[in-house]
Length: 205
Image 1 (tube, helix red, strand yellow):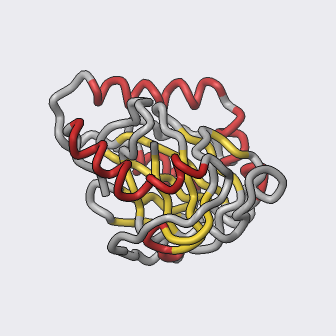
Image 2 (cartoon, rainbow, N blue to C red):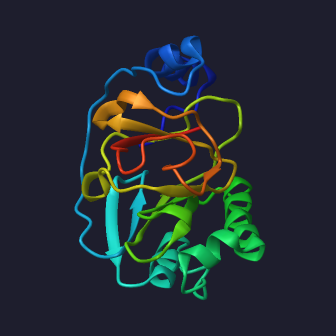
């Protein structure tokens, strides 16, 4: 789900859902709730499109990335860990976001974050690629949100943001409970930032 693109509406989202976070300034705090949606995730590598709130899952990471990029990247590394470490892969993912920003195409698919079931981007338990129609602009407001991670509830242990996005993870659905500070990458939520295997909803900022 994307927040409104108008300046006033984006500020309202910040006030309505992140006021406590901004006021508290700490790593964890209590957040307000919003409506939730869920989608099944029954294979190892899933892609969620926040513009449509639809989740599709695939047998391999390259298949998931091909779907996430609308077929523009069909040769992603077999290993999500290799992808996370690859500057070339990051540049290609971000180039798609820049292309979408300069295009009037309404159905562009832009990768916002890749979330991993294990620490250090390990591949054993799968990945969740989060997409939208545009990246994040870095102004500190919420650009995209997922009120419920569905089949990925309480699974995320590491992640990396793309196309300018930082990710804030919430302990419960609807942005409730404890939450993490927004960052662009965390190789180990077990060691840095908490909420390892506890995230149930997210904001992309």
